[in-house]
Length: 320
Image (cartoon, rainbow, N blue to C red; front, side, top):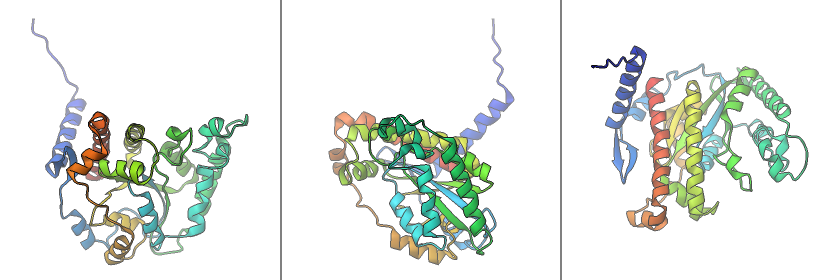
């Protein structure tokens, strides 16, 4: 008896589309030391040539930018770049931090409240509604304050890393993008996200050698989990994707310059060069010394998770 297998047309089309997109991505990428690396292209140069053209939205729009990336991928750099931008407004930039993650009283922060039972040592009920309403109010008030005050984009980054801070609840201390996008919708404001990635070995060196956040095995496992959370956030909120930045890129992504309100490619490039400090390139011997053979299986999984995030970004860049 011959069995007939029927494939739904929608699945066939979706499969063909994904195959085309991944083939396109891989054709413009290369494998270096077992990891996916984007090949050099002229895309940024072309975007710089068209810097003054509208990219996405009216220049006067107020945008809240979520910076998604694991520890060690460049949050401190991005903060310095933002402080050098025309968008920088210290008070309103900092005022959003506490209702999102309240370090000293976890139960008062929208993202920190789940850790209250572990760290506050109190029987106080975790209250999500109050900080959520406060975040909605602040988003609305900040947008109302700055809308139409400038002929350029005014951006307010929200940039905690995955995870953030130390303590016994560290694995749960990461941004909840779903909650923040819900608050943005309720506040009636524009929110987007930028994704930051970096060479996996450089991330582990940054977070376990330069800054001793934890032991290597635990850090590799935790950051692998965080990358998978980020990838889920990307897939769930693809409409909010704005740009991807790979730590170490010599050519700044002009979309970042537009998002931060820089007037020209030259102005943005100067600020970028001033803020960015290129890391020392690791040799193969240094990588082997950093990651002993007994940790290599975990490191391979970490690298694959980083690659998945990059591929998701490239797919969304291609489809936007």
